[in-house]
Image 1: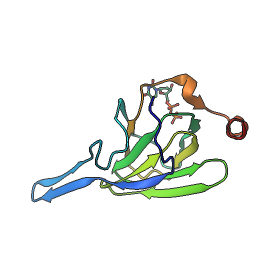
Image 2: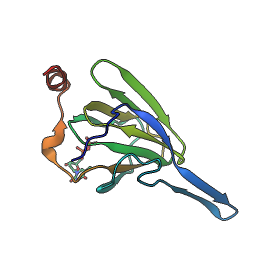
Image 3: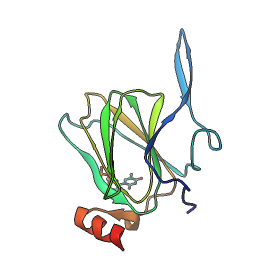
Image 4: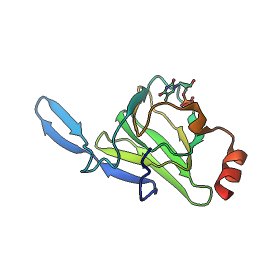
Length: 138
Ligand code: TYD
């Protein structure tokens, strides 16, 4: 898997064209999307008050966007922390590999669309925070 050069969480603007019959949002590799997408998934029906993720990926880069409703993405590289309120289908967050992330504060009917740089690989996950800290210090 090709790793991103700059592995810092940040917001990415999606292009948008709004019209009388609705809005369309888009992102393209080589423009704003920083990697080639190999997998797409989405998270729906999260009960208010529940959390998702709370894990790290070693290599996988992801872009997350609230295509409906809102939620919060907390990210840490073990030293620095970031928190993004996702409530706009035109703004995505880049969650680079090598970070721990937690999704929470889901609104009713929130939908989190995830674009991922690789196919599903259970071995790319770290699900224990202490293990993540140890892995970061290696
Ligand atoms: P997971 O990434 O562990 O999400 P969370 O930490 O929020 O629970 O995914 C939950 C389950 O879904 C897990 O059993 C793995 C499976 N899954 C896939 O099979 N393919 C995928 O692309 C994703 C994202 C998850």
